[in-house]
Structures are given as structure tokens and as C-alpha cells.
Image (cartoon, rainbow, N blue to C red; front, side):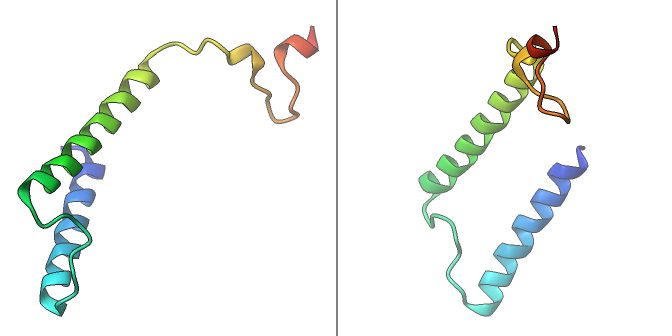
Length: 75
């Protein structure tokens, strides 16, 4: 399992436990539909991030390096 996923799950469980223990309102929707909405939004965000990261960059030549010069301005 990915270590970021494990840390995220532990953090979520810890926040939920702490909110319940201290009587603080949970910062999430109380209904199952609302919780599923949060899960699907997170899943969509993660999948889109992976999809976009796997594609080759189309505008790499326009990005400046440490000096801010692009490849076009060097030629």
C-alpha cells in the first residue's frame, strides 16, 4: 500500500476519533450520500492528476529554467 494513502487514512481516522471524543462537529457531511460525494470527488481528482501526469508535456519549451529563459529565447 502507498505510504501516502496509509498516512491519509490514519489522519482521517484520527480526526474523526478526535472530533467524536471531544464532541466537536465533524468537518464532513453527516449523510452517507454526502460522504460518498467527498470520496468520489477525491477519487476523480486523484485519477485526473495521474492521467495528466502520464501525458507528455506540450509546452515544455515555453517553461523557463532557473534563469527564467525559455529554450526559444536561447536560440
